[in-house]
Amino acid sequence: MALVGTNNIIQKKVLSATNLVTTNPGTSFQEVSDAFRLSITPKFSNSMIFLEYMIPLNQTTSSHNNIFGFQATRISPSAGNIDSIGASSGNRKRTAGGMMRSQNGTDGNDHNLETWVAFDFPGVTTSCTYGIQVFQEGSDAGTIYIAHSSNNNSTWGMSSRVIITASEIAQ
Image (cartoon, rainbow, N blue to C red; front, side, top):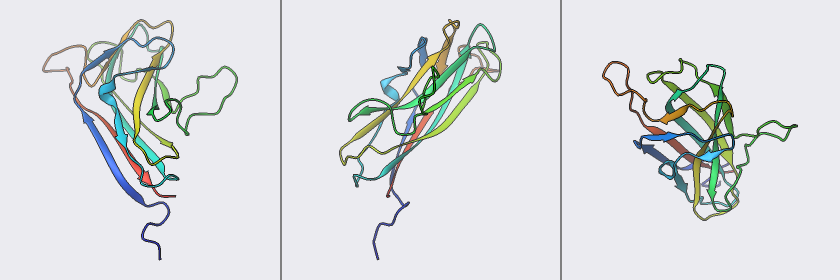
């Protein structure tokens, strides 16, 4: 009997970052911050890396209709899209995450929590580093506050953590 079967979690790495980051990313996906990078070294070259993201934020924007989006990205080795990115379809923006609108208002106190999962088959047994990218609709000049709110008060102000989990799963 094999000591490591398929679909077993081999290892987990967790990033719990308290960095308060402010961004105006523009219409193309941009890395939020290198403070939100997590590395894992797969033990097997055919393993899947299963990624879980929890991003607390405050989006100040000009409208509830403005869209912004997050995605998982591989920083190294070979930076680029991870395997769970959406299929190419016309002019649609491909993502390994999701797009959303401000769910709880658009001022300096309104909190949102964006969560998603993604996966990657890096095909290596060397260190793999993952991060977060963000974009916003072209008509939106608003600021996105990651892990905190724009307003700093004891009634509505928020400060939290970005949590990213990477799990190696044997195939």
